[in-house]
Length: 145
Image (cartoon, rainbow, N blue to C red; front, top):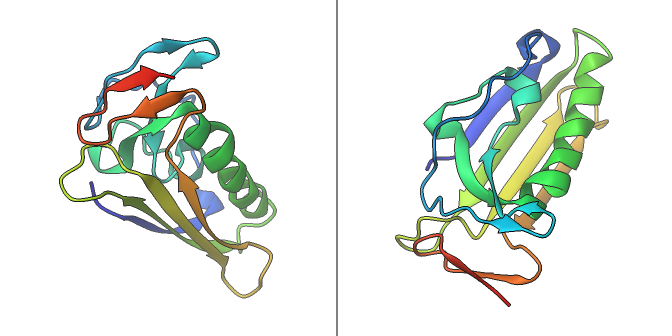
């Protein structure tokens, strides 16, 4: 899994409906929870920003909490800004953070900066955890607490 970097603009945003994800990222051992599924196939750069979908270099095993609502909230801020004008650009980087040879990232570092203004600016770390579960980051298995 590598870092994801992009210079985003409205012209990159998809107009077609997203197709179902079929590729399983490293450490994918999904299970049903009381609120849905433990894991999501989490896009490093969200589909709504570029239309990238089943690209293995852009997907990681992320918990429901990491993906939605936490990553999604920042992606929505970027999308809102980009939709305001075709002259808006955002430099965006997402780095999955692994320890050693672990198959599941411990979290993601997300950075964004709008070009020419500070309307979009953040540098956040989001933990890849799910309340009520202990994740084995080495292989992606989990236990309910």
